[in-house]
Amino acid sequence: MYEELRSELKKRKRRITAQREMILKIFLESKGRHLGVEEVCRELLDRNIRISKATVYRAVELLVDLGFLRRLNFGDGIYRYEIVDRSEVESHQHVICRVCGKIKEINSEMVKKIVSEISEKTGYIIENHDLKFYGLCPDCKRRLSGG
Amino acid sequence: MYEELRSELKKRKRRITAQREMILKIFLESKGRHLGVEEVCRELLDRNIRISKATVYRAVELLVDLGFLRRLNFGDGIYRYEIVDRSEVESHQHVICRVCGKIKEINSEMVKKIVSEISEKTGYIIENHDLKFYGLCPDCKRRLSGG
DNA sequence: GTAGTTGCAAATGCTTTGCAGCCAG
DNA sequence: CTGGCTGCAAAGCATTTGCAACTAC
Image (tube, rainbow over all chains, first blue to last red; front, top):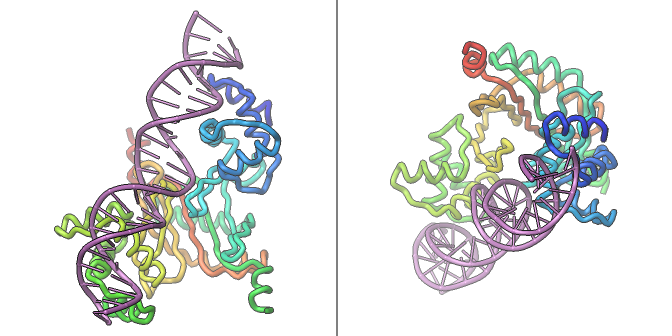
């Protein structure tokens, strides 16, 4: 993945820097998590690496541009980012527990059908989407009803 | 709707004020639009009504709590609000043009199927959802491809 | 050498909050 | 009356930006 990053950076005449590789590394080692800038900085500090917050902001923006990260928005006022798995479908959907905040990724075949249905009905060309389902996860469900 | 607002406020021992009714009125008269606090203030000014921004912030939060408004997040750093139509299904979905920003509401039967599929697969109880589809609206599609 | 990067601090922009005065009940 | 409400200004926060020093190439 670092090789791809280097080649993408070269392609766009942007520089290959230790900071950028390090930040990508954090995301590669945190697969499945959804990190905000603050958390990225914390992860870096845990590894005794100090990169200024401004640089992290600029790096994640760049990594989103280059297609390595995806920006997420869970409506809490903080932008979070996750690594883009090239093998995965171009869309993404999350199920979020309203009690514990746990986030689960899902992948429904039915999503494709919805997309084409919407495309037909509205005349829009749908390029990507962001689906969030809110509810109770099994654990919280048990905890709340059980006791 | 104002009657419902008054009774909800009484029920919760909150006061009935001209500002709160006025702000609800703005939303009732702007059905289908997604107003941010700034825009609500502008609408008020257009009607020669001055309500402080802080009050608007507090009022929309209250109206969301009471179930009259729904908070939306289109990822541009601004919370927008829309009136909740009691007759409508408890869920909502938007199609957003990435060029002109136009937002269209949709209502797909297929959404219900997805919800139950997800519920089965994940064990979550899905209470509501927030679906956003991004792409090109017919107008921008024409403008971009046509010339 | 030079243009892209970084770190810092200051600025920005949306939202929240403390507080004194006001007003609905 | 009195506790909730409003308006104002100040504070909070996440994010962005200006700039001088630095560094990849």
